[in-house]
Amino acid sequence: MDTATHKAEEILSAAAGRARAAIRSLAAMPATRRDGALRAAAAELRIHAVNILAANARDLDSFAGSPAMRDRLLLNEARIESIAAGIEAIADLPDPLAGSLAEWTRPNGLVIRRVPQPLGVIGMIYESRPNVGADAAAICIKSGNAVILRGGSESYHSNTAIYLAMTKGLRQAGFPDGSVQIAPNIDRAFVAAMLGASGQIDLIIPRGGKSLVERVQREARVPVLAHAEGLNHTYIHAEADLEMARSVLANAKMRRTGICGATETLLIDAAIASAVLPHLIEDLAALGCTFRADDRARAIVPHLPAAGPDDFNTEWLDSVLSVSVVDDIDAALDHIARHGSSHTEAIITENADAAARFLAGTDSAVAMWNASTQFCDGGEFGFGAEIGIATGRIHARGPIGPAQLTTFRYHVVGTGQVRP
Image (tube, rainbow, N blue to C red; front, side):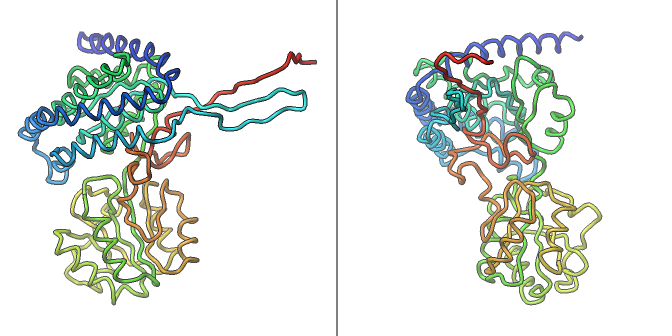
């Protein structure tokens, strides 16, 4: 083992030990204390906004990625306020550890209760967006978990400034230092140490590009809660309202092109494609969008660039939209099954039966009817924020808020029963 790896493992082990010690008190704290700590953390973010913006400027000065990815990294006063408000919204949510999930009495008189409990120590590995660390910390605190954060090197200074502000508020509220921790540097050996920390970290959540998620899933010796790419589709059905379709699609694609909830492929019903597709293309082109289209779409709008072999399998995260004309709902669902990533799909239609067929026919984590795919977001779901979006089929799916970072155990209450 080289020196860097050994050092990273030592640092991680110490951090995990502090986190493990912290969770013993976090879950036992009254909800009012956890909520008060979150409000204190939000207040410190506002107080230290100037420092956070200065740190973000350092990251932006050295960033060389695309405009869409730069937008993911960018902080301004409005975004810092949004982060702080999101933390306060999390504090206002019901306590995910309160009460019981179910209760029943056995014939022998035993009362069995299924009660929520935190997952434990969460390892969060994320890229680009500095708000992710704040969201993750707040959701973990709300649900009684401790978290170890490792952000991307491109946002290192922003992440650190946010962490310092939040933990100042947590300390003022009397929280143990191990509740929220951050990697002390950008050494990739720390990521490897996190992935190998079986018995120290209870769950790894990666949030970033395809290569990051694939690496975590391939190398982790710790359970992983992850999402695949956000290769999302908006299907415009034959009975769609045209003005609604134009408005929703423009938002779904172009509101923020670099987020995982952005629509990457337009599917349009052949019955209306000739009349509707030119308007949709014109709207999006005016917003700066470019296109990759199949032969049927190009037959209607000839100037569209032809889609390549992999274009319908591409999460653009940019101002690029794949376009395909499909025969009907079944063809749309077949296309999604072949090319989608089980993230978010939407149908635009005035036909309730058609919508029901579509919603039931896709197995993606989130399916929408007459709404922008960009609503696939923890804040928009009422979670305050999200720690990620899960597209797997175990434990949780869709946006992950405080309730999704809990598991359960059982309390059994007797009156002296013995088993025969």
